[in-house]
Length: 114
Image 1 (cartoon, helix red, strand yellow):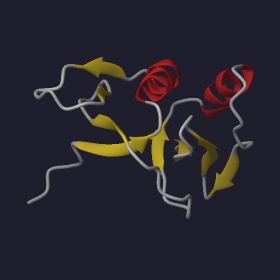
Image 2 (cartoon, one colour):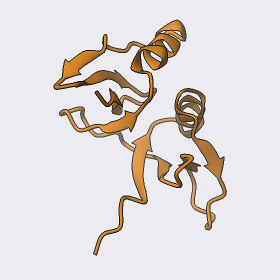
Image 3 (cartoon, rainbow, N blue to C red):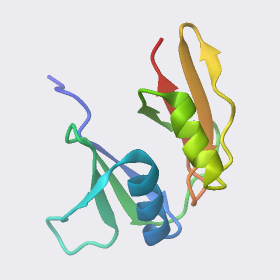
Image 4 (cartoon, rainbow, N blue to C red):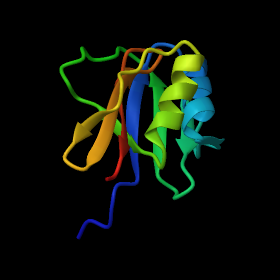
């Protein structure tokens, strides 16, 4: 039986730039890796993780990771103020969503429940 999602791994072109991006804008914290493998492991407050590894980033065909946020407008403003291109929040039923790319080109969604 599946209990939930523990982590995802993203290929990134620059681990340091990706780590800085995710810790700055999405409040993830870097945690120690249990092995000497390269990359970085980041963790959210709820224990879910994103593992960053240097590698070829797949072409953007719509696949993405979505972050659930409390105030999408606040997050979009912080990203825009920092020079990150992010779409204007758009309705999806009663929810709102915006899209952007991380420094390596991985597509991300910011999602606020309705």
